[in-house]
Image (tube, rainbow, N blue to C red):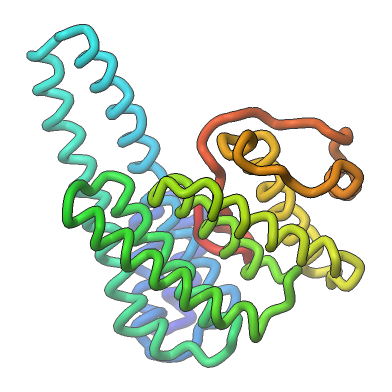
Length: 277
C-alpha cells in the first residue's frame, strides 16, 4: 500500500472511530524512515492516543472498583477483578511497546527538525509514563527511568530550538510536570517545571503566531489549571493573580475561575501539543 492510500485510510478510520485500524495504517507511513509531515505526525499521535486512552480509562475504573471491594472484604469479587485488571494491563503494555518500537526504530532516527525531535521524544516519555502507571517493582522503576530520560532529551532540544510559546514545547512541559507529580511523587519539581514554562510563555505571549495561538493558550490554561486548581495547589505558590487573570481573559474564561479538581491533566492528541495525557 502506498503512503497516500495509508494516510487516506487512516483519516477514514478516524472518522469511523476505528482507531486500531487507524494505528495500523499510520504504522505503514511511519515505517518509511523519513521525517513525517505535521499532518502525518498528528494522525499517528491521535491514533495511538485513542487506542491507549480508552484502556487507561478502563484501568482506572476497574482499579477503583477493586479498591472498594477490597475495603469491603469481598475476596471472591476481588479475585475476579484482579484477573480482569491484569487483562487490561496486558493490552496497555502491548500498545505502549508497539509505539515505543516504532519510535525507536523509525521515527526518532528519521527526525530532522527540532519540532519533530521534541515531538517524538515527548511521545516516548508519555508512553513509558503510561507503562509506569500500572507497573510495579523493577518494571515500574525501569519505565519511570526511561520516561524521565526521554522527557529530558525532549526538553534539551525544545529549549534550544523551539520558542517558549510553541505548543509542542508547552505540551512537553505540561506532561513532564504530570510525570514528576504522578510517577515520581515530586510535587515541588512538578510545580517548578510547570511554573517556569508558564512564566516563559507569558513573557512572550504577544509573539504568538495566529496558527498556534489557540493550541498554545489552551496548554497554558492546562498548566495553570493543574497548578492552581489541581492537586499541586497547596505545594505551589503560582504566578501573580493579575497574570493568571490575563490568561483567563485570553481564553475567554471568567478571571479566577476553575474547571474542577482531580488528576493532573496532560496535553491531548489532536493538536500540535502532542500525544500526552
